[in-house]
Image 1 (cartoon, rainbow, N blue to C red):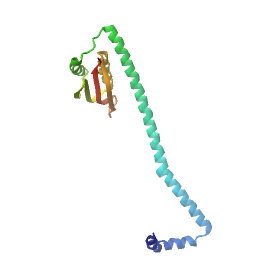
Image 2 (cartoon, one colour):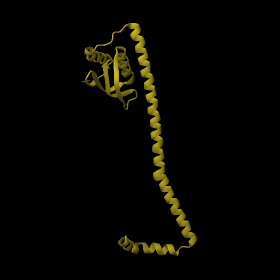
Image 3 (cartoon, one colour):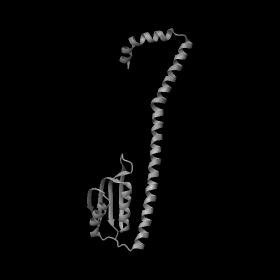
Length: 175
């Protein structure tokens, strides 16, 4: 610290002399201006960006919660329609050995391109790069109508409106 002070002393000397040459009123005015400058810098450089980031995050959370609520309503509607159609039409539930063939046939009918299908114990995991959301709901509706349980669904949005990326759709035949 002492060495730093000795190095800076020759450079600070003109500023100190000038400061001492100012009247006391001018010194107070400059101190007030410096305080205002520090406050403004902190406000514009720290507080405001943090506050705006929190606002954006809260809005994004509300949007995602709204999306989740809508998706849950759609899932409930699909389950209700499935229960109604199963009772009315007398559709037989799938057997475990029929699941792969049913998945292939149904995705082909709906023109969904499966990127990957992977067996996992008694379940199947499907991955789609891109799928129209309504087509995905139709697929889920058909699966549920045949007694297939949706164990997990991981969907993310894409840049195209109405198109989603299905990272994981895990289904199994209910026993």
